[in-house]
Length: 266
Image 1: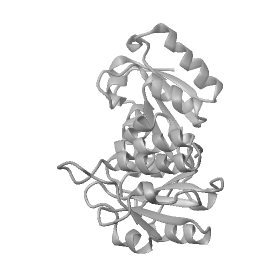
Image 2: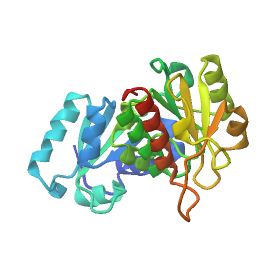
Image 3: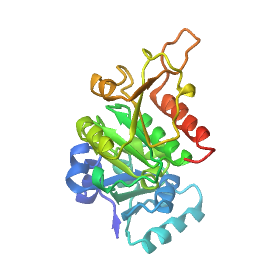
Image 4: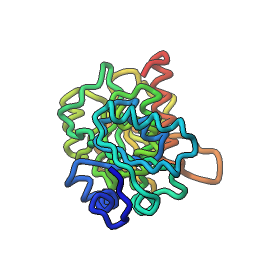
């Protein structure tokens, strides 16, 4: 099938998926770019459709993605340059767009291996940070990542792009803070929060048992809900003029300290 008009309903449907409300309504999200689509496919992402624009391919060999997507059950549609430019959300697109079914996000389906290592991200606003934390979680073997009271969703294009496909290699969930705290309590999981007000450096705390490491919003940090619920509070020592780190950096430090203490295993 070839679509040339930017006003085609299929093109408009792709554009609509830029909005969180439409992603939640349809259960679909968009991934743009050859590398990103290939990574999500490799991670087992359930692809529903692939849209291509051959004149934009930088490397003709990249047409192999069409075969792989078709083998995975995707509907293949070719877009003309004007139609593709309308649907694309990146500058200098490379001629590949795909839609995937969003992974389930309910807490009940999570079953992290023991001893559990879980990353809690409360009210993280920037999709790039959420995606970067997911990528760290994949590299470190984290059992689950939970977005609490999320200000962005897992299907946000910038979350998907920053995660490099880890959205489908790491179990994820989205829930309220109250639900998540209750879920952790039921499973005997220690809650460790990061806060500048803590006295104990994060490297001095035992992270070998079942543990949930909680990090908060970029500007305000963790809410009182998590600070009050914490079993332990730790601090990342700061020696410069800046009094805080990027939330994704903070999460990476804590997660890899847990990995170190566990003998190099997530």
